[in-house]
Length: 480
Image 1: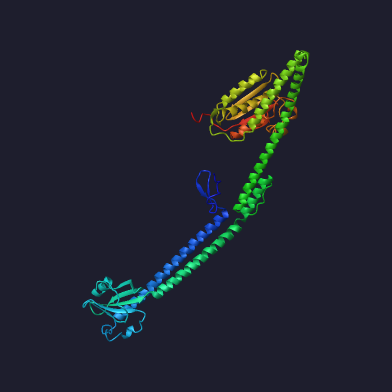
Image 2: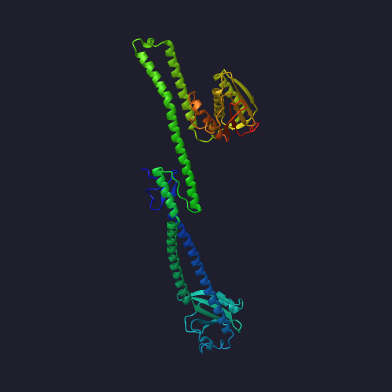
């Protein structure tokens, strides 16, 4: 059984298997903020707590060591130290009930304990001090299950060292309390961090939740009304960018509906005429006389009309297919000599308009693009000029420095219509009775835009129309 991504095993932990077969952690943005805040604050509290504990321990140890060393050095300089022994503890040691006191005599190999506690277990560091090899020694030992800090200093008599050991029970008790307090404050800090993260996620991500709700509402209702934008922070910029996306989607939907409506309108007329002609031919063929009841001229006229309408439908469907391509130029492009494209297009249009004269002047101009698209755009420009030129007229084609100019000797284009002739299915009142789909110049503009160029309509010196196509490129082949 296949487990959907993000469900099944590990769902409670936010673990899921992605499309690539790998396992991923899937958590909401709010939970991530809470976890990151908790971890960051927890680590900070832990570092501070450990640093404070270590600092306190080192400071207490240094204070204790300094006090022990100072006490031992003052006692070692006392005159009554060497007379102490079986007579009892000297006067300077009476106030030192918190320490263990011993005298290590290296000359006689004896250790005299001046208090009444158990024997101290001394080692090489203390012997080195008694021998004069070291100025002092300081270390920690365990005696009868209790930790002691032991200091040894030399006395006035050669070969004799004074040893003082102080229990670390009070210090350890204080450090334990400090440790528990540190842990308690650390846990409290983590809890506060989690609450703070939850508060930040709840309040800081409220605009994100509002934006998500608005996006879901738009996806459900397809209402492309722009979202309100407040402030100038990141969320405001995100809302502004989303509004731009909504405007683009709305415009695309309007263009799509307009294209469908215009295509339906344009297809209705030839389809109706084609259906009428086919019905008439069918009725005639099924009559008792067959086609004999229809004059040959009328029959040929109907068949020619049907053929012309089929060709018109084929052209219209091809133009619609071309306009439906909104994707950018494919990566597999090549250098194209626009002069060769113009020559090929002129040869094609000459065959379709034998009663016109074409004056052509071209200079090499290399464009990076698609040969077929460019030739179709140039052909559409020439077809438009041929359609409006009178019988025996002249079409002038010039290409220089990436500017293709096509002049005809027709009635020209009204200045108010020049901005609309490149729209889909737009036709001037004079052109509605002429053949064509109204998509040829729209295809020219689309091809120009896909090749980072432009196209515009003006008037020439003879009063006819002048269509100008500009395409970026260079005079020499860039890959030659």
